[in-house]
Image 1 (cartoon, rainbow, N blue to C red):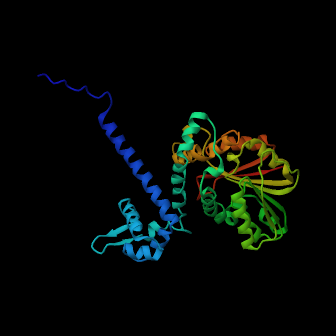
Image 2 (tube, rainbow, N blue to C red):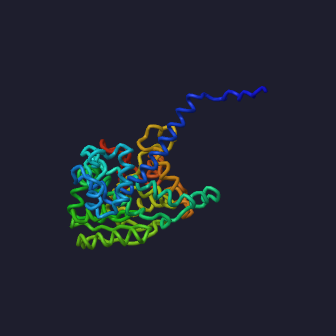
Image 3 (tube, helix red, strand yellow):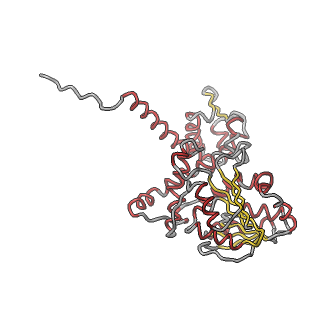
Length: 362
């Protein structure tokens, strides 16, 4: 009997097998990301960093968690090369060099904060699949813990460098804040930046607007805890924003691209500034052109965040859906079209992912 010989593949077999390995690594890393999020939220990285090499029982007791779950989580961390394991002693250890980017207040920044976006995205996957079919969008309340994650992100990317690196981008701004000016944070989220500024500059007056009631409630609690009398927060949709010549400084941190109509918000910000007023804006520093972002830090992660959150929440408001990677070129153009004539673009040496714009109303 003659056996049919299967046809030779019409593709490069070695290249295909190499690509299979790449996809396998991606899937494996995705699973690790979920466990990084668990470890961060459960405080396990902080616990491990404070302990000598310890058993799973000792780690669970120190973290006040179930040992069986902790042991399974540790298995992921060991096989991922994050936690060291001594089999004979059955002890686990997180070296200082790895804790340096995995704990709260980590000296290199806490990368586990960003791992939380992976399970958050998975939780809305069914809704996003429907949006692929209908072209509709989502609501902020579709995303559990979103504002808590963004508050952590803001704490290490904005608040931590606010006084030493961010405010000095505008000459003389710190002195003006010390003397006393009116400040608005447009899209304030949980309010950490304004709380820090209000405490630092008691002669200035600070207002924060955000669309989401849960974020504003958190901001109000933080302001009360800080015992600041020069600060207020309000739930406010910035669509059609208009408060002519009411502020000397308006900030917007990672907020404009999510808006229903970013161009009108920027125009409203321009109109709300007094003569000589400043707009300080931070956003993702990627390009508007996909081909320019091949080597941009965390580009695939940022496009994922855009597809799963930033783009659909804008579309859900009937907006433009510009997305996270709307590009610094788009932002700069829109600032000009809003009426700003002096626009400075900055990238901080230690933070290649973000772009900062200082725009003078004059």
